[in-house]
Amino acid sequence: MARYVGPVCKLCRREGMKLYLKGERCYSEKCAYTRRPYPPGQHGQGRIKLSEYAVRLREKQKVRRIYGVLESQFHGYFQEASRRKGRTGEEMLALLERRLDNVVHRLGYAASRSEARQLVRHGHVKVNGKRLDIPSFVVRVGDRVELTEGAKKFKFVAAAVAGADKRPIASWLEADRGSFSGSVKSTPVREDLNEPEIREQLVVEYYSR
Image 1 (spheres, one colour):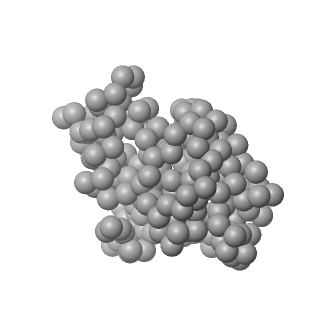
Image 2 (spheres, one colour):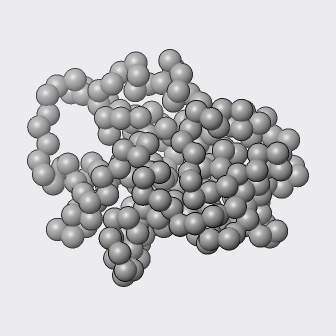
């Protein structure tokens, strides 16, 4: 599966806000956006007035980068959401939130979604007792997610758990940090998805143009 492997701090600077792509570093003084809160490049500090199209494009790119998916896959989530009942933007976010890599991150066992993706891809995550190595797997209400015995000993997992209180807690998940597991209590709640701020209606307008 293709994925972005370039410098991620530039993505935060491009979108003009912290996307929390590097875990603990994003909360420290080393954060590139804290030190240089302007877009990268030669003309990054110049004044740029965005058109309506550019505003919608930037919002789409921001959401896509937050969840770490490429364009074709992200567009697929939008198309799936548009076929469902309810508000398309909220349905799209609910699908992205229920990705297995995002759930592992939200439970506090990875400091970033890229770390969570690595855990899943290397077979260190089980869903309902069965190992899964598909980061895009969509969990359902009632599913139980847990780390394997080997993953519980990883230093970066211990560090993520220690710093979990700094990150927003999702009310639709229930974590048992003692056993490195958790369960899906309900469907994602829109109010939980405000860090970083997301304006999903602009994404809908971008694809509906």
